[in-house]
Length: 196
Picture 1 (tube, helix red, strand yellow):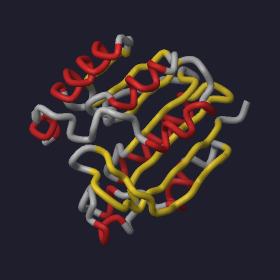
Picture 2 (tube, rainbow, N blue to C red; picture 1 turned 90 degrees about the horizontal axis):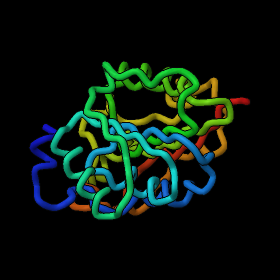
Picture 3 (cartoon, rainbow, N blue to C red; picture 1 turned 120 degrees about the horizontal axis):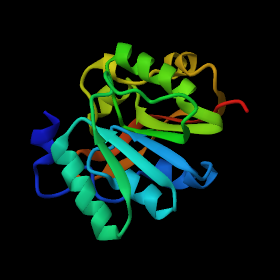
Picture 4 (tube, rainbow, N blue to C red; picture 1 turned 45 degrees about the vertical axis):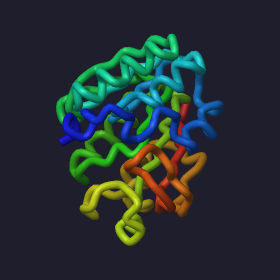
């Protein structure tokens, strides 16, 4: 599915970074950042431009190839890893920040990944997330069509309970990112920190 989607010549979610990431990136600790489900690279490239050491993981080899081209175009280095998050270990106390932008996963896998996020952050490390909530199904401006893939605020808060929430909000905002995110979106935004 993702290889086919990303085979379009254009960047289907655009080549500019996510607005929530841009707004909150200055709060992320400098150091090693992991981008989950990074797709065509817009967010990993942006973080590399901000002088983070960035590793990005995605399932799609086609998406990664486009991400590498985008990184080369901007003159930055990003380590790209092709992997399924079901099989990918985030490690322990490894990342100063982890970023998940519209990385929608089945509920069981999301719980597993969020558990790993809590272990994989260094003390003081931060997790930044934005994704669609179930209300997005009525708006139909992008995102998964299955409710189980969408983000419920209380469920996400419970899954990430070892972290301290600095920002956790469900809201509607315009999401204009390429041809796949095309209007008002119902999103969950989160910035959380691992206790020192």
